[in-house]
Image (cartoon, rainbow, N blue to C red):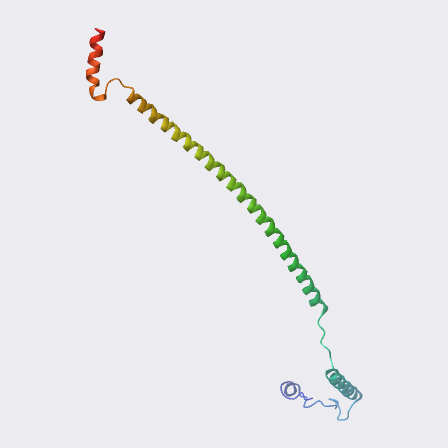
Length: 151
């Protein structure tokens, strides 16, 4: 490993490679660091080489399980509430249809009463017209005659 360049030029250190800064001989510390470096490289190579099995984390399975249950509960609740709403709607429709039928029945009865009263009025008018003693054209003369009899 070389520290030349930016740091080396400014600090005056030309190269650090197992050689002490102050002496030209390798030191005990440098050897220990060299051994540590080699052991770290060996360990990392061994860690990368060994076979691994990919295991899905347990948290994802738990969340999926919980989400599945929650979705299932929502679907069941929606189905039940939909059925209850539909039944309530049908009951309201039956009540509304019964009210409409009652109103139509009342209207029909009122119309029949009105038709009967109109018919009775017409029959009464015909009866009055038929039971007249004098035709309408002769009424002014009939009045004169009635006045003459009274005098």
